[in-house]
Length: 591
Image (cartoon, rainbow, N blue to C red; front, side):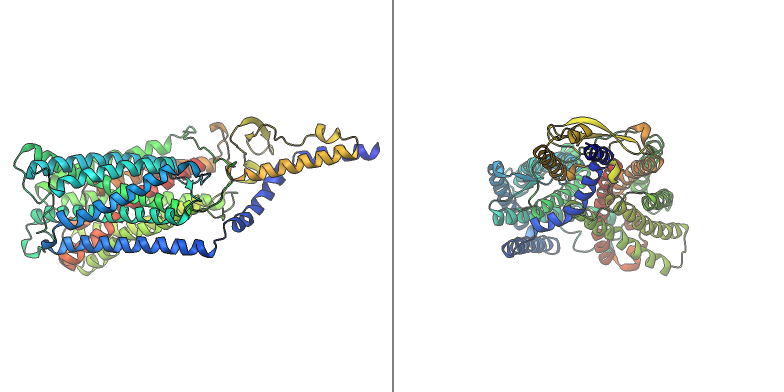
């Protein structure tokens, strides 16, 4: 009897520590299990290599056609390039419909892929792209009056392709395909390559119309190149008011079309990495809900740069369209950017410091979605960094003759600093995991109970599955014979196994009143920087490019060289802002 009482007392003492031990054990063993389950075989590597080579060849073929259309007027964009794009659209739509017919056989999903903000962005930009195709069709009909023209027919095909792809990404972006893997990989890579070719086509259209507008404003006919002689939608004159409306609408909607193809290609690449991936179908992902947590300072301060930025953007467009030789509009826009970039740099530095002080460990587990986010963030930052460094060299070489040159130099330096610090803040935030004492467990059919941890920490709900319970003193003390003790040991092991299976859905559930100052500070910074990145996306996306329009770098490097540099950096810079806003939203939800 005495021995049984001592065993019961020991069981009561270890009762509170058992769930935490199971969770910690789960963290230590998860990486080993994933490595064993996902180690690629030789056929898998060959399949990935084959599909990658297919994508590379399609991208190079499309780039060759597009560049030939730009630099050789005889090739005609309305024939060869558009026919190639329609063929690629048809092939990818056929594969997506084939995948849809086989969707019933998909039994595994990557719950980290296809975040709601990504799918929402694809849906929004997809709708805008369809509207753009409607405007393009109307414009070419008004211009030529020939319904059989390839320029009229192509936007219709593109609108159908965008509709099918948007539906495909909304419902299948989480799929981990395990049947017909070679076909799945090749189909996904063909779709990625098609999106990249469509992005290049859209970007060159936008570049040409920008070239024509700037050359008309500066009246620098001596430096015109054969790029500006190429016929595009903005180079043609309209004979009717409706045609003019369509043309202006096309120019406004182009940025959304460019963003759509970039975001779609990243989501498709994630699907490609998930082909053949084995996940536990019992595991459910943490469903983060957007909560205000009583935050006021971040949203309030974030509205200030949005309002001021919109006013500066409108004034800049009006003044530059009136007289682009005046330095005032450039100085105002440069000054606004300098102030905003300096504030964002300080916020990023403070947020990185708070991450370092936090008790949360660095999450080093394999996560394809997060890895791609980090890579895209660094690649997209190269665009603005490239433009900024070239601008610094040009301004320094002119010996700072005007105040606008000084502001241009300061703007370029702060742009570099802000990109570096913001990347550090975002990467630190994406790699932070929750502490073991703050983890909850969720599953498909949930029932809640409250788990009280150390008095210095908050109280968190622990979501558990019916029939999976924590061992209690009652269950441990009711053992009266050896058979009962063995049964209870099996119950504890079963609990451990089920808890381990549900590791990936661990989240920290907090109430607004219990949010500590570190996490509240991170949320305030995240929401503020989201709004700052949005205004920095709007200004260049809708046509304000002071470093291209002020004429300094164009005179220093020559039109052709600076034209190429800007058209390499600007699309990446626009994508960087949108991608940063999405990553900052994820940091806000998980902080």
